[in-house]
Image (cartoon, rainbow, N blue to C red):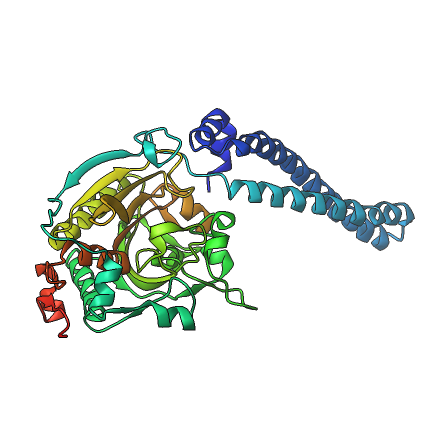
Length: 426
């Protein structure tokens, strides 16, 4: 979340940030937060004064008792204090709750390089890489390809789990794990620490990574437990140093999180619900970095470079897109998406996001670092190295052959043990 001191010192900056993010309804919150915070400071002072008065009177009563003097007036005076203190405490807690609820839903301050825009049409294409394939035959989408090759069973998955679940089968399972192992080896060579995190987190912990009210409808809750299935390893890695403090010399800390991801994806519809492009469960390897303010830009570029190297190795056509102000999530200050080419849709679709979250998550998780002179909140950066099911769909479509077989990207062949997925014998 944003530091309340920053809000009070720069209310117009925060209001303008809400405007460009197209969250106009929250602009009035800024004055309310400032007013409530000032009132809470006054209440806190009044509470401290009353508690001090109570302690002082108690000492006076003890002194008078020792002197065998009348204490009736002091007893009467001190009896009035508990109710006054309780009333102020309740008012103070109520104000604090209101302030926290609003603060936790005020988005991060947008980076200066982010274009102002109302929706994805205003996103900025930074560059395009790779050659878009030109097929001389009638090409198929990833679902039809996978079904024809006996690589996927959607019908039985729907019976046992519901829509947008799947059974991966045969060589597609091998290809899925080839992507995972390829990405793990790649990031390990880049000196990332591999991490397989818990797949469930408590609400307090997951709220350190996200604005909970925004994402509550997209994450799965465990019934009768204070636990939620993770939507990405990012949330669990962010929690790794919850309420902890680094020494500056320990930063940056780089992690590659390997996990399944679970999402309701309630708002999705249309072509995206066919096959394995937009599903409720998928695997992902996430790059995540804890660093100082001064390291953040260099580390962000490092994450982005790693991402590009992965997709260049897979030889998938892609482009980098800087999200506009209204299309950027609440948590990041800036996000660059990698979108890869899907022939059957005749367009690029998002496969990965790279975000600088500044100290927004760290304030929520109370993760800091200390220098010789002061203590600050860390900066957190994250990037999807590989979301495997979407990438599988992209590989199937771009590497399909005239006879219906699928070539395997050269970078993955040592992990699959085969160079192509052959057509089935009839």
